[in-house]
Image 1 (tube, rainbow over the protein chains, first blue to last red):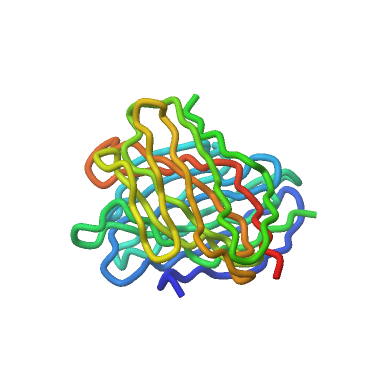
Image 2 (cartoon, each protein chain N blue to C red):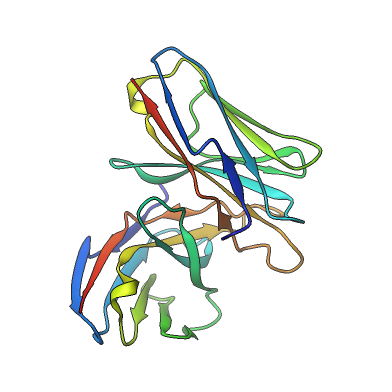
Length: 114
Length: 115
């Protein structure tokens, strides 16, 4: 158990809808990273928040957005969903003391768009 | 485009064998190279990681070898066990600012260890 929690575990929704994925980092970690894992694209970095502020952006679609709250949990919002958005979405947390490189992944949310 | 190329795609070894998974990168700004292990239905778990200032790192049965000049690194699993059967991902990240280490992943290697 990495200490990172994600909810929900599974999500099934229809095209055009909007969903919110939630992540709680390990205690004391200030950074949250979001990654998407799909069969064709593999694991891809989407976005990073550090202590409430956006720190880095990767291959994140404009239909997707994220935020990190004062209690350091983060939410990834996916809107106008398409079939191709079906994937596993992971968050990872890091930045505790000197172990700032190490990222610990949550169990993921499996999103199915029908 | 930042890429990490991983090979082989799949690997089958006998119990006790030493599977070797290789990765190569182009971006010389990469300075942190972790390996992750992923079981079906689970998130990637950090296995071992290396920085470019060392050529080898061992943790238990897992060893990373790093060749900075060739821009290659590899994972060796000593005395492999059926429980090691999983998908292994190499990754790399640059230090792109205080506290920012976004990972670029290889495509993964599915390892099967046969009893």
